[in-house]
Image (cartoon, rainbow, N blue to C red; front, side, top):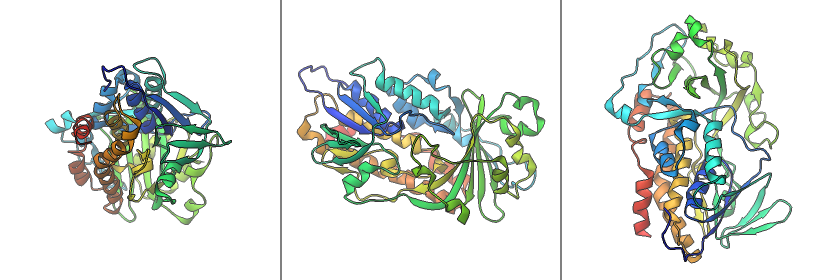
Length: 418
């Protein structure tokens, strides 16, 4: 992505948000020789409480950027080989995976979020090609001027740049500055528990054999009697941990507050107990709750699921949105992080070395043209899975083309139209 022409002036780029999308963009842009600052509210930025699916489309971008798969400690996964157990209230063998050549071609990795995050941070801020990005932790952006490219920090400091990238998540401040009004993420009517268990004793526990025997992807346990409830269970960190996401419909007491808005350093997702977890799944057979007896790697967190409506625009002047700030959705297709990675990696082609300051608005418009349809498709289809009770066969049909997409190739082609 770099140019052999050394006469150009590198851009000064402000990225708001040091999550997966922001760090991916920082890696791509520093490789082009640009000067990148990343502003992050958290004083100690980390990723807790969940694993993440790095599917083939994400891996393609990460490979391009030089990510070490060894550092990701990922468990090889074939999504199309997920094992479905439909009747959670009785012992039922379930539907075994049918692994096709397509599934093997689109195999991805199941990783702990912190492993992915630390590898992205290393590539963004450590030694490597181009100037290291400056990560400013404990720095809150309170306003921005999208036309001029300036951000205002809490305390009054104004930082001028050629370009602003809003990677500040589902409650993005940059989104409100671009749109001129506040668009909030809407309550989906669903919540989930998220927890990671240690599996060192798993092989010595016969009643948990269903969790690991012949694993190629996830275990999906669904209650189709009454209100929809589902477990999504998959390994990470080279199989040493099992990640559990347990979906259930909200009740009034779940709406006492919005955990995502709790400021750091308070835990952004409230913790809960094993007893509360079990109480939300009263019909599940004890066999499918037995993993709760395993030692936990972290606390059990409760997460209210919210989704962002489609936005009228992602760009204004010198500012653009990416990741959850642009298309935040539900985790039912395992592509939330994937879309953020694709967004960030694509910007490396759309803002190459030699880009002039006056060309930035047009290049950000190209980012919107390239990424909007795909981001909104994943947003819409992920939400639709809840209303359909998560139809695995339909989800597989959707997944069959999502991992095949080459975001780097698409972005390279898009540069020709600018």
